[in-house]
Image (cartoon, rainbow, N blue to C red; front, side, top):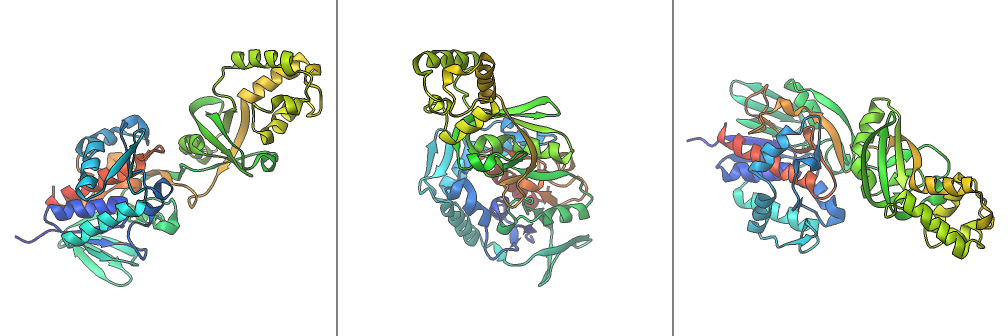
Length: 409
């Protein structure tokens, strides 16, 4: 019986696992990758250490217009299957509070074992070849690059989205999906820095501080996250910003007003902080306003908070009015930044948006429009929060698509 030929467009995380999955099912597999090596984006994950999954695996950690598909796919290849998959490839893993890494702390470990398995399974790899067109004939799929033409029984689009195009995901997969009638939710940067209006950023650039960041769109609360906030010369960054950024980017795309409210003291309620300030006034009210706040906030932040409270940095603190004290408490807990942009796709870790999940079979990831065409990973309108969820989505969708593409069902 003739082996089915599965052509995988894209040699990133989902494409590599799709290739292994299909080859293990007995298919002949070819990967077409436009970069000069496979898995470049894998090497940059987890700050080069590769946070490849997370023990806490829940649908709530994924976002998209319709996340129904997430549970279906994770049921087939989720956290435990991912652990077993990489351990069987020879990787010793370690757990950092539920965040899973290779014990080597090198993302290259993950890429190396995947590539070794591809070689072991006889997967053919074509590098530095961009797919220009895909068509379906009565003989199968014809996949064309500038250099060659391939004939396959099934095609898996594993191209990634538009984030970090230097590493391979340049948005070309969306164009290929559209050939077969697929429609997209608007694609915007996610897990990305946010740009703010105002001229005060340079004075606080470089500050890292624990904070809660809450997002409001057209005055309506959307979401929040707490963690280490990084202040830049153009706006805000850090994990809590990344976690809310996809909602900010979507709202900006829709021309809505976006406000990020920063709580610079999330460990205290507003009432507790107000009482704290009153007691501190009794003990240290003779200090200047600037010196009064040293020990509470980063020194670069102090000037900004005092200016917003209309308190002179050199003013003796116990001469400040009750109104000024109340304002200081308020701006410390509710510092509002109007967001007017995000950094671009090149700085984003992933994209939000993509091919509607209603346009693929929830069980197999096969296109509902074209038999034997499968879509995986970031190409679909699903993105995860920080913590290994986007790689998990890549592994899971790649495995499921590869298995069914090889079987032809």
